[in-house]
Each structure stands twice: as structure tokens, then as C-alpha cells.
Length: 188
Image 1 (cartoon, one colour):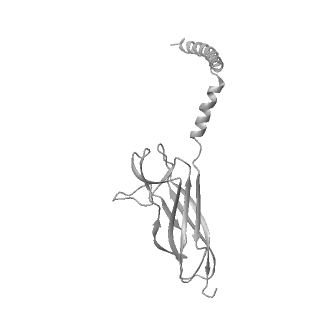
Image 2 (tube, rainbow, N blue to C red):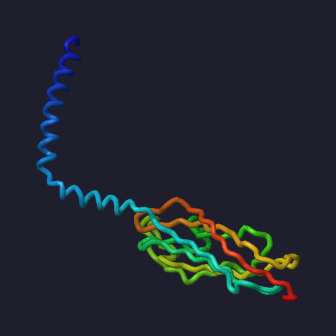
Image 3 (tube, helix red, strand yellow):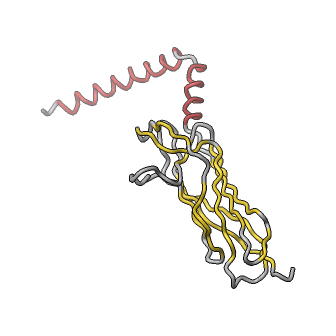
């Protein structure tokens, strides 16, 4: 057992000499052009997913007692999707998109409306789900509370969604939106 540490140090010394030799041989044996495409593929696969969120109102100005529509549009990179606001049946969709308005100055009328979702197989979840791809526009009707004065008001809210492709799902993402609306008195 006494000679064991010295034998290991000789083995490591010999291995490090041969390891350096093999490393040099491998570096010169593999053309550099072959290493570049694999790096580019890695870089391409790890590119972040891009989201664009836009909110607008229609019309841009209203009188007290009138209604307006709030549109929230989400644009996703190609190959990615988000999930529907609503699920069919009894099962609650844990990945359902959620939209909120962070204001008590406006009263909601009805529920959020969405275009017809695409029913598709989701490889990441391994089940059929209701999704929206590339560009989706949600809308909901609102009116100002009766006690609101004339003026320009900020409309702010959040969208919580989970973007997935058929391989992976991102963690839930919360993105804020904002727009404005002008409320006019009956005298204007």
C-alpha cells in the first residue's frame, strides 16, 4: 500500500503526456469547418422565443355610458404556440392563457373572446390541446364607471401565458400591456 500513491502519480504523468498528444492529433485531424456548423446549430436551437404584445382600444374616445373594445394581440415566433383561454369539458387547462385588466375605473361586459383555437397534438404535453399560433387577438368589451370624470385614462393589464413548441414548454410568462382611452363628458 506504501507504493500505491507513487504508482498513481507515475500513471497520471504518463497519461497527461499521452492525453496532450491525443488532443493535438484530434485538433489537427478534425477540420475546423466541421466544428462551425454544429456550433451554429446549437446557437440556432438556443435562440430565445420572441413575443410581441400590443393593446389597443376601439374607439379611442367615448362618452360616459358608451362601451369600447379592448384588443390584446400576441405575436409569437414561428413554431411556438400558446394555449386557449378556455378549455373544453371538465378538465381545467393548467396552461390556459389568462388576461387581466388592472383597473377599477372600467366595467367588463362579457368574457374575453378569442378566435377559434387550433386543436393540435402537443408533443411536449403528449396530449391534444387547444392552441393559438403565430398571431392571436383577444377582445373584451368595457365601459367606464359612471363616476369617472372627463379625461385621458391609462388602461393597463397583464397577460400570463406559457409558450411551447412540440418539444419543450417555457415557464409561465407574465407580460404587461398598456394603452389609453379618452372619456368625454356629455357636453363635448
